[in-house]
Length: 247
Image 1: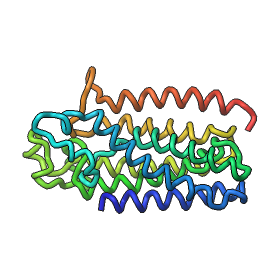
Image 2: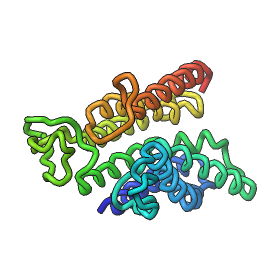
Image 3: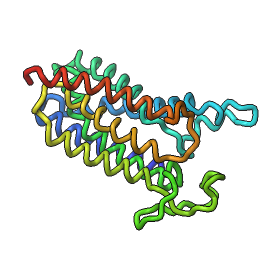
């Protein structure tokens, strides 16, 4: 089910990205699908590498098995690694295709795909529900998520319901996708993808703070929060600088 969520999300991203890209560049009818052949596996590998590198104790301790690294169906994909390696693979693939047919800059391509990527992330997050993982602090509310005892951290065994952080992130991603679609064409090329990073990072910073799964921390914040803050600031500077230019 975790894999199915990823596949459905990827399918939606390809469909929407292709529709948006071909609307402006009809000659690029099959480009999104061709790029996805390389970008999606690269994204999965990048996501897994990020997770392994940021939680090495799960895989490299004396009692751990290196075979666990390949078992992505047990969960453990870092979105930052997925975006980074997936975007790199997409860029290389896009450049190769552009040698055969006339295509616009990669920034146009990235802007067209940005809303679909958020929708893919929204759908993919439901894999965490099937795996009973990455939930938040204990919560007593109508929307609280019931977690089976085996999946609760030791310090929270006496609690049964928790913040459904996967749902918060899914809702945030869908809302952000709607904002990007609404703003399409209003800013200079490349701004929309930067805004995607800005919006996702902002939501992830606060949602990450609710989670109770083991993570490395520094000065009271989780490592992913520091990365989200850095990406938010960097992408914000780029967006503000780029958005002042004529579209």
